[in-house]
Image (cartoon, rainbow, N blue to C red; front, top):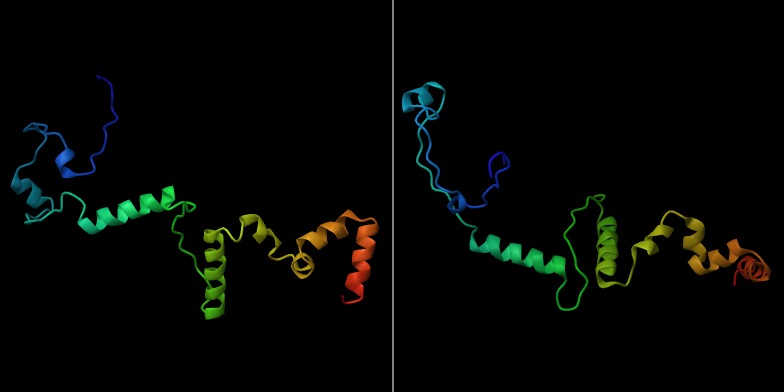
Length: 143
């Protein structure tokens, strides 16, 4: 494996293979202190805590989809400070997760004509013809 400059980074300290360090590569304590370093006693968690492992497993289950549900992933959003805006975002999120709403349904947001008349009615009006003429009469009469 000569010439392989890519080294796999270890996730845990136990996974790092023991490699001898040449004396030329290390500095004496006096030089380290002179360079601004100071000796400290440190405790290091070598493996993930139980809570971190539990959360990691939960994220993996969510991303795979569990109990026949669609896979989900956490997303952090910003919203205006009023509760009505936050509640609206929560409702849209719940409907997307439950499958009651699709991303294509959200395309009508901002198009007042489609929101007012509905997507099906708007398709009829755009297509023209006798169906559109009847629909315009019904809409004009306030029906």
